[in-house]
Image 1 (cartoon, rainbow, N blue to C red):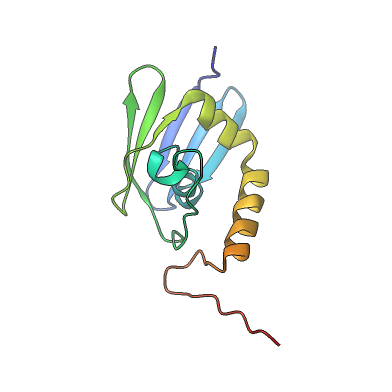
Image 2 (image 1 turned 30 degrees about the vertical axis):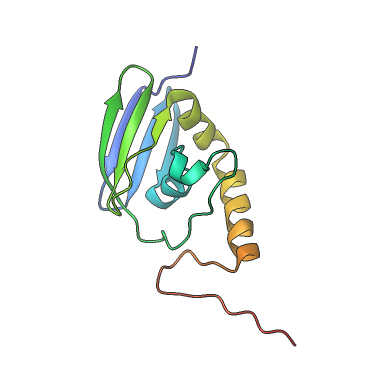
Length: 124
């Protein structure tokens, strides 16, 4: 049985989603949720597609998807991933590790969080 949040709050101004599980509260930035979307577009078919340039992305809408997930609509048009209760809880509890791995992957790929920034490597 997946762990269900006792409260879900969308904060459009701060671009965050807060999930409460009893006395534990987790705040997930829209950028974090966007780059970890469970959609095929992001997860690929067995090979995840690195998302970059999502620093300023926001959340427009949060809707239930049956009894098992949330559908998140982002302001960059992405809305195809269904975030199951299990996956959301994993994102909450592993946020620090997942974010560090994402930043390392960005760096390795020479990509940036800011869509207006490009990373240039000088070979000396």
